[in-house]
Image (cartoon, rainbow over all chains, first blue to last red; front, side, top):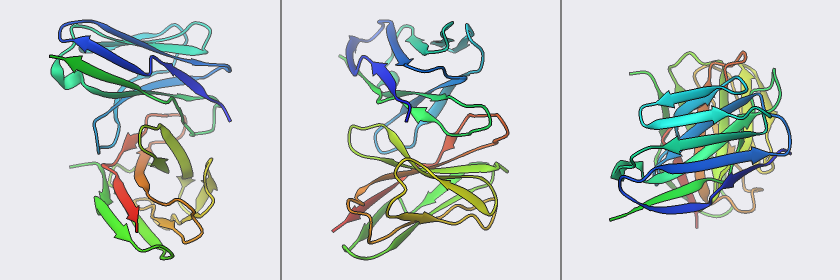
Amino acid sequence: GQQLNQSPQSMFIQEGEDVSMNCTSSSIFNTWLWYKQDPGEGPVLLIALYKAGELTSNGRLTAQFGITRKDSFLNISASIPSDVGIYFCAGVANFGNEKLTFGTGTRLTIIP
Amino acid sequence: DGGITQSPKYLFRKEGQNVTLSCEQNLNHDAMYWYRQDPGQGLRLIYYSQIVNDFQKGDIAEGYSVSREKKESFPLTVTSAQKNPTAFYLCASSMGQGLHEQFFGPGTRLTVL
């Protein structure tokens, strides 16, 4: 099946720094979603993108649907301690099919 | 409060026993999903259902079974045929019909002893 390559696998940053992560695919996706998961909890939806080139913000988070439709980016500005967690990208390849393909996650750690 | 509930949060079973994990949603969503997550890994799709009385296998359906008799409920049975059942199981739902945002429950951690 399709695979999503997410990078970096982990990030160690200081509070206040900006964060960038991305997700790439070898095939075209029609929808991109970004989730955050805290340990032992279910993922929480952050941003949904439906159109190539779309740039959407949710507070300090901004995500973009790549023009080629094969990638997506998530940026977090001015990180705070509660940003710690694992961030997953997910995509839908086929219209009419509700299946999501998930990336392997980016683990964000904030160094005191 | 609208949402997805999974119970219990932690479940222990002996090897060779079947176990059923519950998932209920009151969001009036058409589609529901079951995922498995292993430590340090992403989510893998077990089964999904886009409408009542219909469901499809995901990427790792072997050793699992589901039913969708009601819109609100999508229970997952982990059978004795599943070779490595210990994992974190997540249920999700979405409106369907082209709206792909999936909303997740809190998860059930199953440990088979």
